[in-house]
Image 1 (cartoon, rainbow, N blue to C red):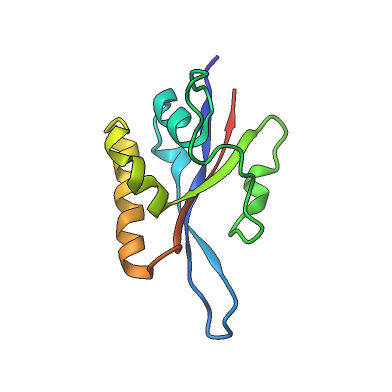
Image 2 (image 1 turned 90 degrees about the horizontal axis):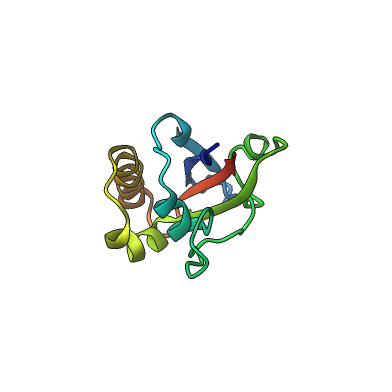
Length: 126
């Protein structure tokens, strides 16, 4: 049995009141291929022992658009990573169609909303 990723890309649109408001933009479960190299490099999931993912086991952010998506029993490896962190490692990541769509979307959202505004929130199952 393999490991699958679940999650979403979300953006932070600060409301006029100044409150942080994260909005879910895309459900990655529909397009993210199973790729243990990506899982390992980003999140330390299914990685060889010498790889410690750059966003390893951070948990679900306190302010998120949809925390109940990650409350299922059997899910593990809950974490998140922002676009600026992905950019640092992007050249090392496999260029798979679904993941390319996810990362391209994140880049466009980052350009629209600015620093620390775009992140990927994930969990895994077997």
